[in-house]
Amino acid sequence: MAAIAQQGPSENWSSRLTFLMASIGFSVGLGNIWRFPYVTGENGGAAFVLVYLACAVCIGVPLVMSEWAIGRRSKGAASAAGSFKELATQNKLSSRWSGVGGMAIAAVFMMMLTYTVITGWTLDYFTMAIVGEFNQINAEQSKSVFDDLMADPIRLLFWHSIVIIAIVLINARGLQGGIEKAVKILMPSLLICMVVMVLYAGFVGDMDAAVSFLLTPDFSKITGKTFLVALGQAFFSIGIAMAVMVTYGSYLSKDTSITQNAFIVVFADTFVAMLAGFAIFPLVFAHGLTPDAGAGLVFQVLPIALGDLPGGQFFTAIFFLLLIAAAFTSCIGNFEPIIAWTAEKFSMTRKKASYSSGLVMWLLGITSVLSLNALKDFHPFGFINLFEGKTIFENFDYISASILLPLGGLLTAIFVGWRVPAKEMQEELGLKRTAFVIWQVLIKYVVPIAIIIVFISGITS
Image 1 (cartoon, rainbow, N blue to C red):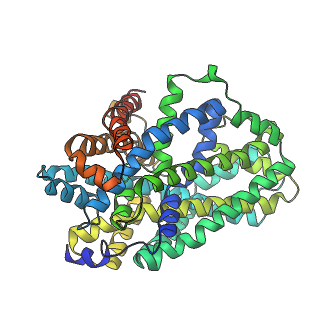
Image 2 (image 1 turned 135 degrees about the horizontal axis):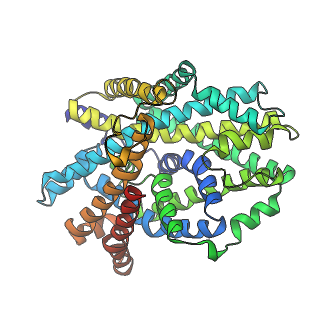
Image 3 (image 1 turned 180 degrees about the vertical axis):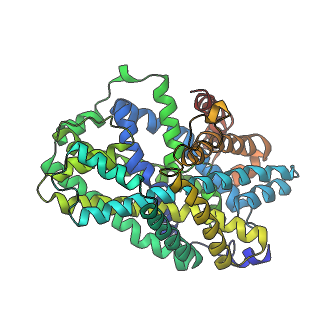
């Protein structure tokens, strides 16, 4: 504990702005720019956006507030597991509540075993865009480019290694020396690239069709599935139950408003996701392509849309540079709770914890890389119906996103809503009576019910 006490909780964010940039940077990742546009396209556009916004406010905000409160209240620990245990101990509750933090750390670790690989795709596509690989490309050629990348383990491993090395070097430098400096570069870069792409899409694409698609809701398209997908997207995009917000909360000063900043982060996250839609859909509609192209929207459909436009080579590179910035801000955030837990568990310095965690993540990430090609027919848990037909890569993604995150969110809501004394939570959140009652209703009833529905749907679909 002594080692992390010097490297973790004794550190604080240098300013509210850097805290917000890091929190927004963690939330704003591939979930916003890669996943949000295609799930919006698959689920009816504006109607889905409204449902998503409701889920983000009613589910995302209370949970983000709760996670920051847990981290800040238990200042003696930096890791999510340590924070849950510390707060439980303070209130004479079972130390087993530390398992909720441990579950979140396991979830974010598994997620990183796929996220670093996908981040590598963005680097590869950026290099291809620079040399004009996507100029005048058609659908068949675009699919071939993506398939060739997936089939090349050496190429994938190279980029996976670059990503791991980069985040290890950044996080090893500490909160102010590494994370803050990185987000001060990455976040402005992301926003500049995003604005450039929206303006470009407005000039050369069909912005009217995109505006209608994203802002004119057709409520007949809202089904039970819409709510389930929207809530799942909120978890994935905002970063709920990933241990990151708890760890970031442990670096938070007492005079920082948790409530105000939670709304800022959630709305900024949603705003960037909408900007991504306005950058992508005008190009998609202008070329007669379908907005419901699924996960291939960014990596297979968009290069076609950009490939034959004026300045397409340059703007394709800008777009994938945008993806790189988004992916790295999330990777940096995701890696932090893993480092904090490793340092706390094994009494390591931050640097040693960063290097050792990075090495383990790199080694296990190789299995994700190989499951896209050499081991694509290997289904390790195929004997279990729930995991039938899933590769190693798909298992990491499914277990983390569909099982651990919902369970972690549910248990977090139960912990702060039902076990930690209300007076303590009200004090930490700094809410007046009416606002606190609203938070209580959401965290005690609305959040658990919604998560249970999503969880059951996830494991039965």
